[in-house]
Length: 483
Image 1: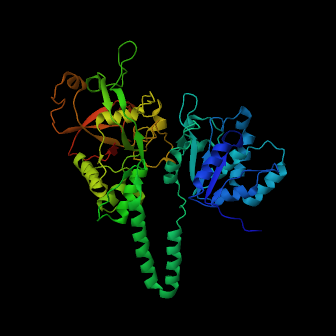
Image 2: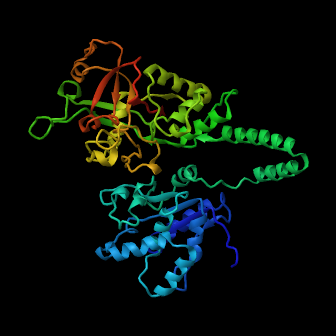
Image 3: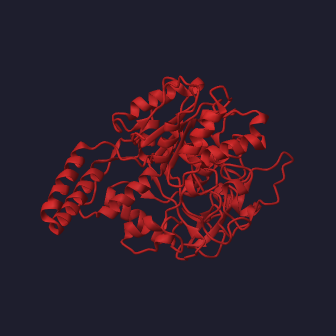
């Protein structure tokens, strides 16, 4: 059999409603990944090309470009025989796959996109990125009703694009490139690798050391010239920063999302009859206060164990790398933010209580949900009923939980989060009183509930006091950068 070319990126799309979008995206990515993008434009045989299955089996990144009507299914598509057919397509060897396609024939009503999705979902080492329209009243990606063989696709972290042709992919490509695992073309680095290989042959052990040292220096140089957030902020790196710190900083920045400023009512709202739900603590969570916040950037996840350790120069267990960092005091969290400032000159900090609740509600396009992103806590939060008594990873691709409309995860549940606000009653704040609710004058606000919490503690308005010097294994933190 002739050896097939290996592609790093596979673009899947439905020709009838996203063909032009997918091709436009391919053209925008091509300069960075030349001749490494699989984009099947024509199929004249009517049969699914087995070469496409082979490309999916080998690629690093699987990009699924969807329109609002790309994944609309009829009841017959949910039939057990149909589900089994596509599950078999996903699991079959290439030879068996080709035999099934030939046996069905060119006129069989086969959904090519469904085949591609189920094939990708059955690979454990592939990186799947759905590219979908922004949320509207009629389209919410994670709420799509899909057949069981491909329903898991909505669990993957999506990159959103505007359906306005004037804004199509305006900011999407920059965001997408930070998510791709495929390495972009870097002719200069390839030259270095070739030179290093020659040195390796000629100098053996000495060549390895030479190559490793120079590669690290090149990585440092590349990372130090990168921009932050929206591309407008250049980082003023500390001359003493290490490669591991650089990588950790970029990981933190890549996982930050913009939160446009606005005005909202903080606290629990009364029902139509003027009373409050039973899960509202009226003494601390009412009355509502009008708050205005300026635009800022917020981490889509809580700070992880590995991010903390690499920035602070500490050791950590690999098995705990992606778990949220906990058992840290408020002052320790603040020192972490200050460390990031010294490394980058970016104003990292903890969010205020108002900034936290504003973001949890969805910012200037609020979700209007009880919990951050949904009215069902099981869809957005790890808590006492579903957590197994442990925290879960800060990684959407390995979590069944949905994000809110700002693409923020675990704002409800997983671990509670420190806020840079002294704990006071809203009634005292409204009257201008500065007297604390609790005797402890060092109490700060913590928000969001955690893996040991009950459902009432997960609401977007729930708040609790905690001494700034206390360390608890259920409390971590999330970072922001103010514009």
